[in-house]
Image 1: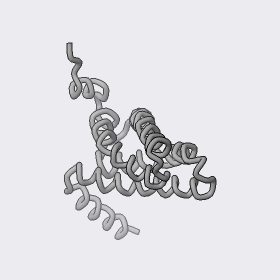
Image 2: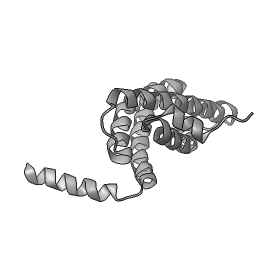
Image 3: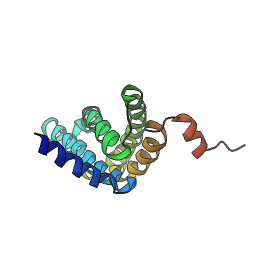
Image 4: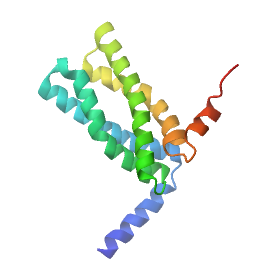
Length: 154
């Protein structure tokens, strides 16, 4: 058992040498694949007419997995589990809104099938997620930091 822990720690320390943006893309890729597989399974079993329900269900089910992998393997924060999770969920709700709108436009207006439509939408929300997770959800001053990044113009 001790050697497994030592191996994990060696791999973890090696992993943390990668730049944060690279870790975000790799962990995000895993989380995206996890969420997309859930989405595809729901669409497969429920039908194309339930694509929006499938999207919502996949988002909800994959949120815990995504939060934990982002917390430990990307941003490496300590404590504040409840506060961070709530902030992550607020980022993901906004992300979901953008994603749902894109999926609607792609499917209903451009007649793209839901599998391809969701694949396209994923890329459009990735940058949004990184900025808001880094500077809001996993940042101690959260909202204050976002206001610094996006100041009001008078």
